[in-house]
Amino acid sequence: MVVWVNKDPFPHTVTAQSGGFDSKGIAPGNSWKYISRRTGIFPYTCTFHPTMKATLSVE
Image (tube, rainbow, N blue to C red):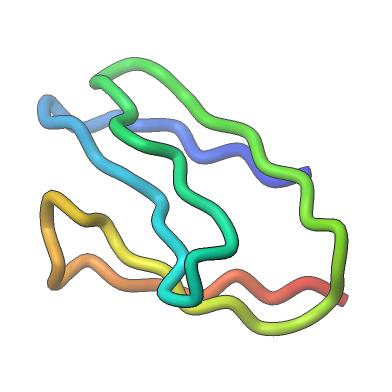
């Protein structure tokens, strides 16, 4: 399980580029949990802030 915690004063999302997962909006001070059912490398971004990008690696 992966937990994203939003410590910013603005909402964010965790949205896979492949469409495999999407947190929708995570409000400031809130979190979102995700359990991957498969291994792989999953690039994701914040739909509110497209320059915020990362990769989830599941082994």
